[in-house]
Each structure stands twice: as structure tokens, then as C-alpha cells.
Length: 480
Image 1 (cartoon, helix red, strand yellow):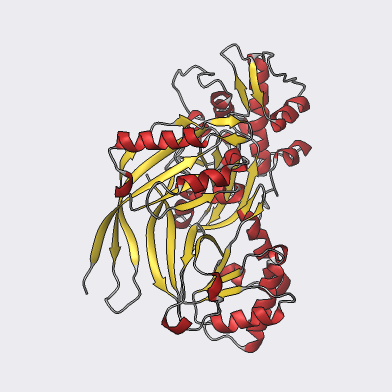
Image 2: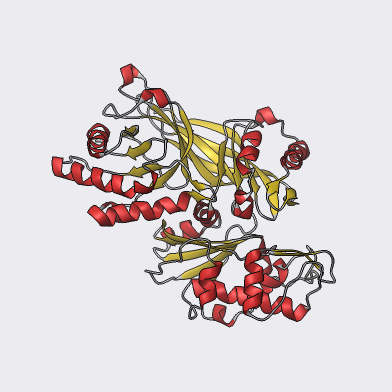
């Protein structure tokens, strides 16, 4: 069998609440399948060839990203890396944190996607960002290697994104409005230039008054940061919860159904948690350094097993590591007129979740759909599962009903219902879904495709008289 090996250049661009950064990597990919088989492409080596400076994310206002300035930053870093746009084979542009909530975020994504290559382009909502950051920080990998439960807290400028991994699988996520740039100062005299609504709420709860143009004392800043650190502990169930926790959540809290074995921290603030250097506390005119030190000195952290993340500030700088082209099986349900479709994020059910029945399965699907919500609603998502090898009529009917009920919140939307299964059952499952839908809706159900959470897929036009379709799988990998 001939082994085909190829080098590709990948770029990851992360536009976050506080910072924008790029990482260029050379990826070695290998196709180990035989000439008659579906390609099986794996990344066998990764080498960072250039890591950009970390730039403050430029804004036109508190609600608008400065797209022109963002593009200039990216173009400058391409020049500094001495890498022409046309040399990039693949990449990802991700807008995260509070920046994903900006009113022109999608417009910026559209502009940047034209830079080069076939990019994954996405605004990551809080739960999806939690998953991406947790994988980038190595929490998912560690939980699989040690057969344990690891929680990663990615603390950025505007939010803290939390993901819990058990045996390599994401089992829970949450997001808190806690970050290093919720307050910005005009100078080192602590005169407030900006304060978010949530930090004002927290400050009021502990008796601190924040006013734009007025200065805070060091004691007041430290008091607020200590309270934020304790909110993180409350969210993990380490200390008793207070009503303020609910106010600081952007969505639902962690369910905490499993004992947490290890804690890891990523994001810009993570670098300050155990830092011993003498960096001035307000070097960046925000509270990030003080917040990191407050977390590091918290008494609740002493009884926890903390592990070093493989990446901290770069945990969400991702690139599309490889595009794996696969051909679906011949038993598909598809409406070809709506194809092709690009950059569809994957929501995958694990084996334990697939074994749930009826309402339990529906609830799990609906719960996981919340991972993909954005400020202006949910985005189009493809549901992925292993499926049954030899399903009977009853199993198909029950699964179809559970999927429809799980997607109830999205049934009124124009986008199609997309299902991807590994086993050869897409046609009968798709027909079962269509039969139970009350209102007409496009359904795409394709088989013989294996994907995972964090993947994006492109679905092409049907081939071979409509019996199969090409699917490009884009796997998000950390460019470290």
C-alpha cells in the first residue's frame, strides 16, 4: 500500500474580546488508505512557523469591530511572517468572547474569509468557544489519556468559558461574564474609561461604586477581582453558590454531575495566575493581571488539583488542520436544490447519549444545541451520531421522533435539518423524519461519514445520479 504524505500551511486567526492574534503552522498530513478506499487523512506532525504579536482588538465603538483595522493587522502579520496569502492552504477565522456579540461580527467574518484558502469561518458562541479552548488547552486530550474528568477555564478579556471533559468527551459547558477587560482605565491612576454592565452589578453587590471618569482605589479593584475569583469557584461547586453567580452567567450553569479530577486554566488571564514576574499590575490599563493573581491566591484553589494547560493565551487560535474528503453511502435522503452548503458545525452525540430513549434523547439534543447559540440566535448545525447497524422499524421511528423533538426550537427556521450518521441508515432515517414532520421542511440525511464535535463540514452536490454526495470534513486543531 502506498502512503501519500503532504505538507500544508495553515493559519489560525482569533479575534477575541481583548486581543487578536495569528499562528501559522506547517502541517504534515498523510493518507493511509488504499487506492480503492475512501481517503483516511491524518495529521502526523505540526510545526509552528510563525506566531504573531498579540494585538488589542480594534473597535469603532463598544458595539462595532473595526474591520479595516483588523484586516491591516492580519496583512501586516502575513508580511512579517514572509508568507504570501496564496501560499496558505487552509485556515480558520474565529471571532470569540464579547467580540462575537458585536453587531457587525458576521460582516467581519465575511470580509476576512476572502484573504486566502478555503477557511473555516465562524463566530463562536460561548459554549462552542469553551469546547475549542478546552481542546486547545489540552484538557480533552488529558481526560482521555488519564480516563478522568478535567475542567478547563478559558479566562479572556470579557468572558470565562468553561468546558468539562470526561474520558475525552465534552460533557458540559458554561460561560461567565468574568474577564480581564471588563474594566478599562485611562491611566495607571485607575481612572475608569469603560466598565461593563456585569462588572457594575458585581461591584454594587460588594459595595463598590464604579463611575466613568472617576478613579478606583487598589483595594476596590482587588476586592472586585477576589469576588470574581470566588464566582468561578461557585460555578464549579467548590464553594457554596450565591445569587450573584446566576447574574454573571451568560446561559445555563454547569450541571456538575461528575466529580472533577483536575482543573486547567487558559486565556490571557491564565498567564497571570502563577506569574512571579514584576510586571506592573495595570500595564494593560485593565484588571487582567490583578484578576489572575486573585485566582492564584484563592484559598479554594489550594485543595484542587491544577494542571498546566498546553496553551494559555493561544488556546483558541485554531486552524483548519486538514480537509478530509469523504463520499457518503448510497442510502441518503437529500434535497439537492439547496446544495452545496459550507461551514456547518457538527454536534455529535457520544455512545452513552445515543443509548438514551425518547424524551431523554430529545432533551440531550436540545441541550447540546445551546452550545451553538450566538447573541442573535442559534446557527445552522448538523447532528452527528454512530447510529444503528441493522435498525428495525421501531428503532427508526423512535429515533426520528426524538430528533424532531430535540430540534423543536429550530423547526420554524428556513434552514434544513441535517443529520450525519456513520452506519448505513441515512435513507430510512431521513424518510422517517420527513414522515413525522408536521410542517414541510428540507431534510438532509447522509451516511458513512464519521465526524466529531469541533469539526465543520461542507456538503457538495450529489454525484452518481444522486446516490452519493462528497463531504469535506474540516477539523479544527490548535496551531501550537
